[in-house]
Length: 197
Image 1: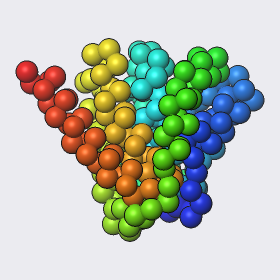
Image 2: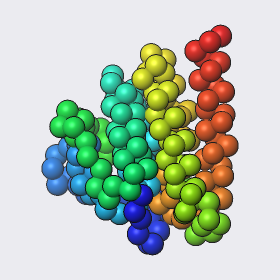
Image 3: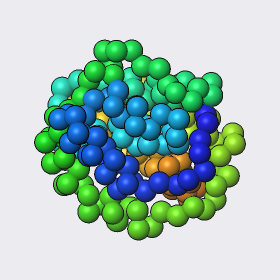
Image 4: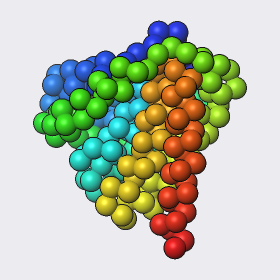
């Protein structure tokens, strides 16, 4: 998993995606991949994690598409690919610019709040072997999304864990990675309860 050393903010990533959506009239999965490929792989995990937590996540098949995107990106990152490959059917999935912008505006105050306490610290939790642990956990979380799509907005739980882990890598914040890993355990517990109770 190649990564550059510059940390990025959550609102900064969203701003770049909004600019891309405004330029093209919509935001395709392939556009997001193009925007961040070769940089920190964190944004490529944050984006789908964030989307399934917003009203966009209520659109049929969006959570499953995001789950497949996460599995492919994180899986290839485990093998050190700088530019993840995605099949055309995934790259061509997307959301309308207005829907994306409206969803982001609703969560922007929360994004700014999250950015206010992120910092570059405990970097050993987001570098070295931990990069692979984080990628593996994100894959596990993504695998829960297709079955959870049957429950309205249930994918927001693993989505939140993936968002925290992606943001941890993006901001190089090891403390946030710890929170993300704890959230992942909670997400697995919730998923297990829903699926087997």
